[in-house]
Image (tube, rainbow, N blue to C red):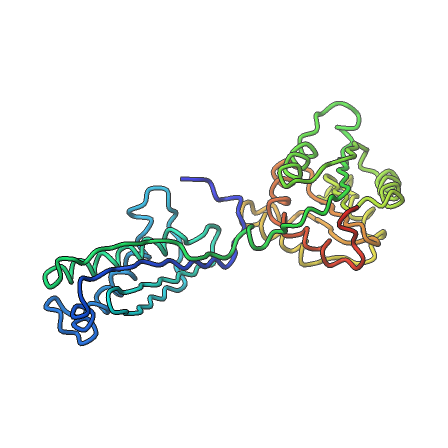
Length: 304
C-alpha cells in the first residue's frame, strides 16, 4: 500500500453515484410497492452498501483500513432507472472515494441480483465519483504567491565543517516540491547574536518566509527560541501546536522540541527542530496549509 504516514488527518468526504436501468416502469412500481419476490430491494441494497463501504479494504488491495464515520445511501426512482447516491465521511489521512464507489457498486449489484428474476433487461449503466472534499487539495493553497523564502541552518558542528547539513536540505527539497524557491540558504552557529543578525537581514530584505532549523531542543546550547521569540510581533500558537502534535504521533520525544512560529511584520518566521526527521515532519505537518496565511495578509502583492 502507499505510505500515508506523513499525511495529516482531516475530514474527508466523497459522494459516488450508480445507475441501475430497468426494462419497464412496472419494475420500478414493484420496487416501490415492495412486491419484488426477493424482498425489499431498497432496504436490502442499502444494507449491502453499508457493509461494502466498511469492508472496502478487504477487497481492494491498495485501500487502507480506516474508520468510517458516516455512510449515507439515497435512492431516487425514475420511470426506467434508479439513481443511487452514496456519501461517505471519515476523519483520517486518506480519502474515501473508493469506499463511496465500492458502496455504490455493491448497492447496484444487489439491486441487479434482486430484480433479474422479474426483469431480464435490468443493467448497471454507470458508477462514478460525483465529488470529494478534504486533504491537501482543499486545505492547501492553489495560489502562486511567488514568495521569497530563506532557510537558515543553526548548528555549531555544521558551521564548523565537522558535520554535513541534512535538515536544511530536506526542508529545501520539500519547499521546492510545493512550488517555492529557496533563494537564500545559510549555515550559522547556534548563537543568539548570529541568529538575530541574519533574521534582521532578511527582515530588511522583506523576505516573506524564513525557516530556521536547529537549536530548538533543551540542551544548554539550544538557543534558537530565545533568539527568535523577542523578534516576533505575533506568535501563532496553533501552528506550533500542530507541529508538536504531528510529531508526537510519531515519536514520544517530539514534546521536548520548542518549535516557534510567528510574524515579524509581514515576514513569517518558523523555528523548527534540527534533526532531519523533526525538520521533515514539521514541514509535512503544516504545509501547504500554512501558506494560507499569506492570503490573509492585508495588501499582499500576488505579483510580487
